[in-house]
Length: 164
Image (cartoon, rainbow, N blue to C red; front, side):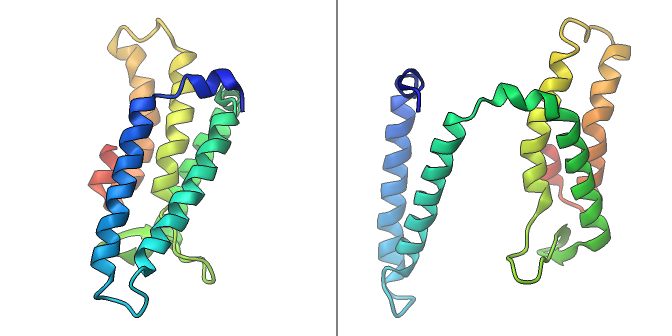
């Protein structure tokens, strides 16, 4: 990792994050002691996910996201295709048909991945129209661009994810 990037990290954010993770581990340790045969089961599980997240964060920090701009249209199409797949092949879970059961893997919720893909795709969409979003006629394509995924998520229905 570039030392310059490491120095640019928000140290207060990292400290707050570590405090929250530590506090969460303490809570899990106290809550898990009466639930399972292994009193630290939930704490161990959370630590594994924290470690995986940390490794993923380091990988993400090393990646140049500017290079994703050339794939923005592919990412947008993939996001819309995933949302359409949910409507066709989705499984209802907790009141929404927003989950896809892959059999041997845990069920996934494509709308969660769609949020990330749309951030990248929409950022490129807006960057290409910089300075050209002054009238309703110029803004309308942006509304339609984000309106399609919004409508597909609302068909599940999942208002919270659609609003995000």
